[in-house]
Image 1: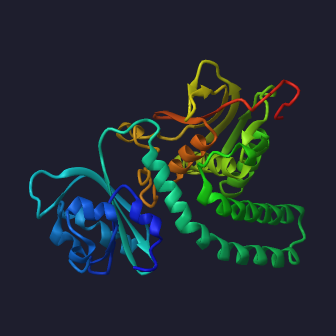
Image 2: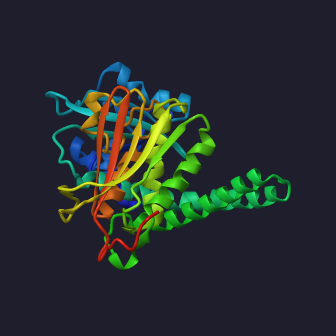
Length: 350
């Protein structure tokens, strides 16, 4: 399959590409190892003739085709029919590709809090989609520039400026996606977290005007150190999730503060800089909380489960961590970052 990015071969979970009748067009190395057969002996066979699961779960590929969306079914038993024996519990995600349906099999089991698998998946996905972003972004930016000639209101021009700045940011982000998570302090810079939060709030509020935002920022917090674009994307994902959880009409609090006594991240550094996104939505189911930062785990029926995995990846890239606490009526995501090198009280982020 020449249109498959080679990195996908190294992903640590089985991936299949299927035709309209669920015949296998391609498998990665992890799928071959799971089934104990080479790609030549797997491709061309109907998936459900060699992999067993319950009938409802087999229908996931058809649902993805009908809805043209990613569909996930959780905690199902799957097994290699040839091997026999008991099945393994897994999450299955089916999603549309340019010429078929993809199916991922995410086996369940104990996972460390800071998993390397999640990072590999997000990095691999970034490499696959970065080039897909750039062409439509160029067209959108051109259309926005043409619209400027027909817009007279100050508010309309401000929205067009916002579109342009976001297109530029996403273009830069696409350029960085291949390297996301590679620590390179020389590429970091001082980052005003409060400016990023305000910009993210403006973006989300333009799409969800009925959401009420409460901003509570600590003026003594110094600038962070890192990459402004990837931090912006992580915070956008968290705020967007909060808005969606409230049905785009709830209340979201954005907070910054110092938090002492926390260590974490790849280098087990002190993480005193805390950013919190708090919403009053229905909360996250308890059975998903422990896995919410894993790829393809989502509470949304049409979600792909990569947004929070990206947040976790960005946090690790900045030597920080992300935490979540959730009960009905209150969900709190906390992004904890190390203090910047040689930070002092003269450099404030307000």
